[in-house]
Amino acid sequence: MQFPGIPENEEERLKSLYLADLLDTRDDERFDRLTRLAKKIFQVPVVLISLLDRERQWLLACEGLGTRETPRNISFCGHAILQEGPFIVTDATQDERFHDNPLVTGEPHIRFYAGYPVHLPGGEVAGTLCLIHTTPRGFNDDDIASLKDLAFIVEDEFQVIGMAMTDSLTGISNRRGFYKMGEKRFSSLTKKGVAFSLIFFDLDKFKPINDLWGHAEGDEVLKRFSEQLFQHLSPGDIAGRLGGDEFAVLITNKERTDAFLSALRKSMDAYNQRSGKPYNINYSFGVLHNDVGAWPSLGEMIKESDSVMYSKKRRKSL
Image 1 (tube, rainbow, N blue to C red):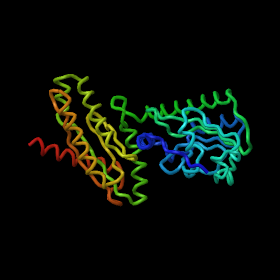
Image 2: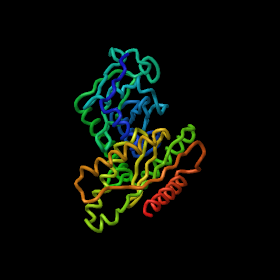
Image 3: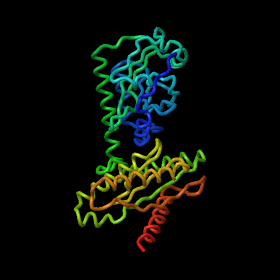
Image 4: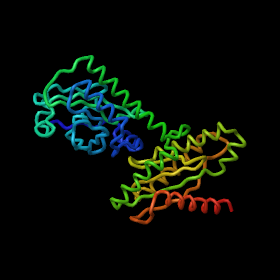
């Protein structure tokens, strides 16, 4: 059996996949209807929309299969995401890459596989739309064109979801997106007993920038600060613009909090030195650590970290 390779941009791919907040989502009719349609068009027993996590394959939509995830290292889709176009296996039992794969020798007894990569709005590959049959079959150019069309519709749905959850100015999560993703992270990490951190940011002297140099310059400040936040995130972390010049970051491992803040400070100082602007972008922040059971909800953490930040901000202005 041949194990699938790893994309060259794997860490950036995973970061974007986690920020899209599609993993562990199920029973979304917009995706389920596409797999039902594909099953009818291609007359196959199984149609999947897969997402490739670090070590698993999550099935966002699953028509004809009784499981929601499989190991990535035995997945056909792990091979398919390395392709620019379709990945076709007409008879897995005769293919040296797959003939002894447990998905071929056992359930679901894959013989035919056709997958087309699906991408997130930023261009990173998320997974595939794939067809599976228990008997070998061919797949002609018209079939490939139809599969491609359906894969592009999946990408359109990703785009719609992303627009609803993304701040249009900065490109990071908006308030709705941050709360939606953050609450899922809060619940998951709390159940696992993992300590994490929430950082609340507010830009210093942002109003004078708007007043003196105009709102276009103020928008530029918001975009540059968002870029600095985003570049230091690790896969699983979340950054969001909660409104105005207020931002929040959820660090999914408490031990990385100081490193994140240090890297942000260094890169922000470097930006200020080279920007040539008549002002610096400075900020205040408040940090809360959620050791197991320390906070009842993400909302309570955000509220308290906001208070911590403003207390520090007032002390700076004295």
